Length: 322
Image: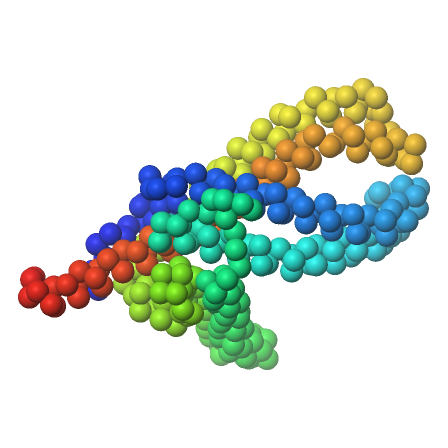
């Protein structure tokens, strides 16, 4: 199948192409950040009263002691459990936003209107099923393909010190590299499944392998470039956040010096940390959204290019044109 219309550089920035309703991705980004913030507040509100019970005892302990680390595990598990609950609640919202992004890039539909134009209909259900199916498939492939590595390592240990043991160590290393390459290959090849599902209006999983045939390196390069774009943006945000935090850190040192937080001043510490923490949370959520949105753009670029090729091939067959 021809590769006309799809290139890595075009795909990685496909989200930002000039198209109708060009503010849609920003509007959906605002919906993403607001929804994540609301769920963060909800999970914190649920977990905080339970964690607060352990706070006085924690503040009375030396932060370097084993007792402090042991006591800290309880509140951390509470917040972790609340975070899992928030993630489950966010899944349908994420699916609605991700599907709206794909629908906008592939079909030109705006996500404007009330509640950011989000909905949860058949498209969203199909995409949710595909996202879960792709995750399960990739994890299953990774797990079952890893099983022989355990046998190689076991034999290498059993034959340690012998020539055969050295051979099995080498085989273990080679197999581990092959396993990593196979998992990356399969993950990249099947990644456009949600976009293909939106394009065709029905669940598409293994059909994606036909669409992505011949495009592995283009897709892989696009995802690599996207990774470095997000990394550079994250480092820039980190630098800006540290600059924002410096005055608050200076105020804290001026007020408390090296004094350990206690119940008397924990509120002041929290107030000084509030502005930098809010910046990092908001900026982090935006980068998180941008990562998903750019990934959606990469897969949308591919399925649109392939749909165009299929249409041209069909038209040529009918008209006899070359």
